[in-house]
Length: 240
Image (cartoon, rainbow, N blue to C red; front, top):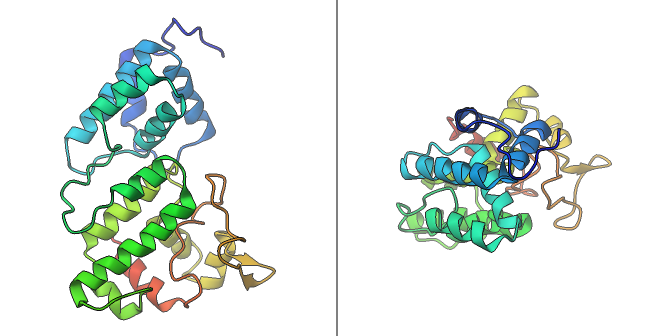
C-alpha cells in the first residue's frame, strides 16, 4: 500500500508501539513500515524524537530498529532532516562517552556507513588494544588466555554496535546463538555463517562478504584462521 507523502500512514501512538517492540532482527516487512513512516515529515520527526529519548536514557536500552532508522536517514541525503538527526544524535544511536580508554566512535561511524570490512579490522584492533592495556604486551591477535582481560562491558558494547547497525544479523552473540543451536559443533557453525568454501576455510579478505546481504553471523570475523579455542573462551564471556 502506497502512502502519500503528506499523509502519516500510522498514528503517533502506533509509531511508538512499532519502535518499542524488541526486535531480534529486522524483517523486510518491518523495514517497509519504517520506509513508509520516513516518507512523511511528521513521521520522521516522531521517529527522531523517540530514538533520541531512548539514547538519553544512557542505559544501553537501544533497539536494533534505532540503528536501521539512523542509517536510513543518513542515506536520504536530505540535509534538513539529517541536520535534525545530527543535532539530537551527533555520534549515532549508542552513547560511547563512558569508554575513556578506548574510543569506539570510529567503529560506530564505520558501521553506520556499512563499511563492514573496515569495522571488522577496527574490532580486532580494539580487542587487542584492550588486552594490551591490561597486560602491557603488544598484540596482533588474541590467544585464549587473553580473553580474561576483556571487560564484559567492552565486549557487550562491541557486540551491540555490530547488532544495532546490521539489522541484528551480525555480532559475537549472534554467532554464539547459531553455535549453540548447532550443538556447539564448530564445523556446523562455519557452514551456517558461510566461512567455508568447498569444505575449506575461506581466504581473507576476498572470499568473505562485506555487505549487509551477508548471511546471519557472517561478521565480525574473529581469529578466523587461528582455531577455535579463543572463540570458545570469548563465547563463554557472552552472557546476554
